Image 1 (cartoon, rainbow over the protein chains, first blue to last red):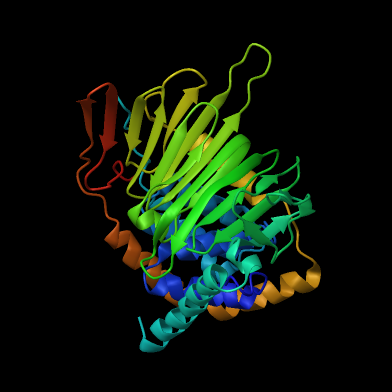
Image 2: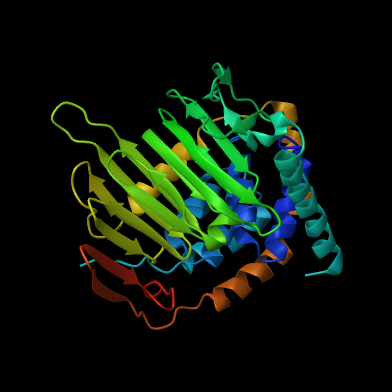
Length: 98
Length: 288
């Protein structure tokens, strides 16, 4: 990663494997960086939505799922699962301090 | 997870640690390298200590005490030797005050001083044992094991400077100003601090977080050939519809909300007032 920061294949492989072994922050870091290469990557945004959902960071998850679904280039076959996850999104906590 | 995937990750991490080792123990030039520019939009500028301004490009090394600034359409995404990433939004300026990392113990220290703009920190190995800190003219934020977004608006006219810090995920985010600290452990909550004041109570910030994330992602469109390559890589590496459906079903079940159990505790610690807002189950509100 550090030696080949511009190599998207290495980055994506790292993110995929990091995700699979539970290093969710490592995967998020990589996907967030990819959005600076092209901000309209709905499949990457969908992955971020799923990752933030797994971390129970629901506001962030909702933001990425909604922007992924707004993109007409999101593949049709993954649109339904994404919509399903968005429907299951818990409301963000309204907790506050004293 | 399969053994092959673990092996690949270990190899990738080996590259990371190897790079860290080289940076720390080989040439004088490498010793000053604390990270690298992983992605940019337009022309973010870095100024290493004693050096001159240079535009940060993908692969440009980042050094300790480097000053990094962006204009209205610039963004930069940096990755440090411990895996921490720092995304710098438009109209921002910061100095990397301190970076110390021992790849053997995977411990160290990272401190950033920001004078304007918006930033996201995704903690790497350092943050597992020590808080990564971002200091603005009105507050100091520390993040442990997680992700936070910090924005600082300098004073303008009669409006004082304002720091907004959003806890996105992690063990905790502590905001300190004028001897008072607010600790947040619930993802999505935000703390604002006016320069000269003390941190406000954590509040929910749906709109603010969405806006900040959009601001950090930017509007860049890759060249057509790059885009085709990315889409091919994405199709090859990310799950198909069937596996995605199964994954989503599994995580919906895994994240099924428990009873909301949020506590607010005020502690008095000598002269400091520490407010703790936490949800032990990290459970959010009831589903729709």
